[in-house]
Length: 274
Image 1 (cartoon, rainbow, N blue to C red):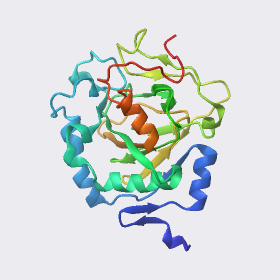
Image 2 (image 1 turned 180 degrees about the horizontal axis):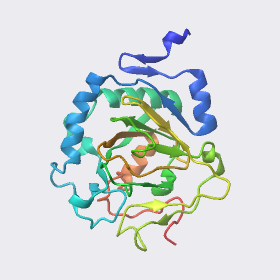
Image 3 (image 1 turned 45 degrees about the horizontal axis):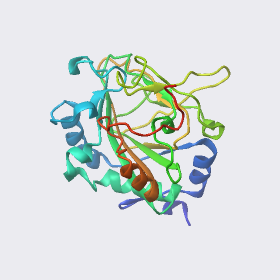
Image 4 (image 1 turned 90 degrees about the vertical axis):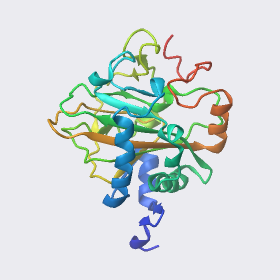
């Protein structure tokens, strides 16, 4: 294939062999110019409707991902809206969902299935809007028929050091799962958030993005993000995560939907709370 055969092709985004190899080696890749400005305009309207707290009856699916569940909305630093397509089904099949599905199928297999979606927004002038260093697999149940995951994060705004872009430890997905601990309180009734400590010798690599770019990472890479030190700029991210069809079916069978309102009746991959 020619170089022009890669990148955006209608509702698909064609990943190059080099990008696939980097994903396997480093646990993540960055893809540029995935969505146009016009396409982002449509997404932004829906995004802001959720992040403003205008969608009713979300329970814990609308929360602060940098603080405890009992924090008042006006005090949120890292505003989180889980499962937007559950609460507004008309969002299903939007252009970003199509493009990220195309990417995921190339990276983890043709049966890649949307597992969950999420809107995240860091308010300006909130240096506490940090996403704690973690591995996604630490949050998820054991017993799935395979854990391989492609999580796509779309930059709805430019993301940089000042407003808290994603950072990763490249290659850390090859070192297995670490023990995670609750960040707020003694258990996850107080907060959804788990975290791990940065070890001596480990270096965080920031992944700045332009609006319309995305990163893709797997279930085991250590990653997080800093707070928003910008006085005026939001940092908004639209996440779609894909796993195998069999994995998603297993999760739903045991009542795991990635909702913070799920009644927990499963073991996690790490016994983090023991």
